[in-house]
Length: 338
Image 1 (tube, rainbow, N blue to C red):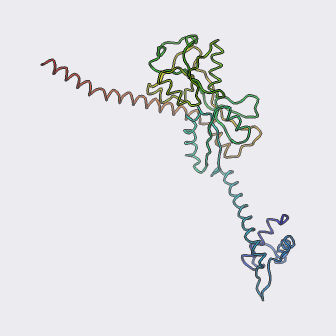
Image 2 (cartoon, one colour):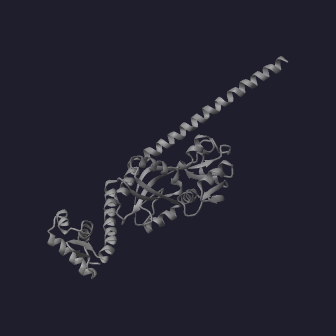
Image 3 (spheres, rainbow, N blue to C red):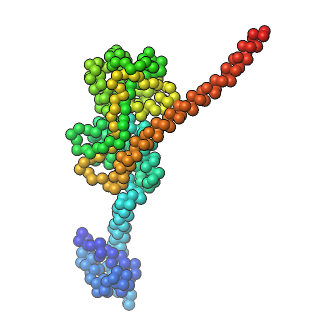
């Protein structure tokens, strides 16, 4: 069976369904002798007769009935493959596996939501981890694309920047340095820090900042979670160097604040990366192009949205305090009359 051709299977299935070589010849633009020849070739490969004559009619043998089910499966699989390839070419569907460093999860879902609004049939598998894990997954071919703050050096990875990526020093609003004008980095000596784990891009950035300024970080807690870092900062446990894009909401609501330190913020870029020696399918290339063309605008829009939330929250807080003030004033006036 290994040498049976797709054309021979097509002829056989048509013949099995019509039981008329003449009709098959007409449908497939062959001669009746040509149909008989193709069937004969399969019979030589299998060692069984596939059809037999019963009076004036053609009937299938038991071997022919057995082969028919398998032949239909083969042809159906080929049709499915054709449709899948057409989907990829036409961007009407397909699947993308995209990896992102954990910090990027604050922006990438917003980017993907807008992408899927244009390409709703494209399915996305999202995988997150620290920078070290993402690089390893890229190298193994487990990811089609990856979003990260710093592409690996010397690796077989092609990367292109699509948006600015500032990292800032964040503190509780009650911290003594909060609200002060720009200060030298030396004021950070001895300050407690909450840091990301080894292997993360943010941790490497913090280590380089301290080295450059001749300082040694006093790390009181290490965690792989940006959410834990934010909660620890809000609780007053210490300071943290963190991506500006992870604190948009908390910053707008006044739950945290950034410190004005010389040399900060640290500016990097967001990159979209893929294996250099792995050609991108059209669906993967379309997502990459979308990030390069519109990623920065979406992130800017997200920041404006957080600012609007902060303004509304401030307005609502003022409104909620006004009745209390009137009530307090009225109570004071009543006491004075007494």
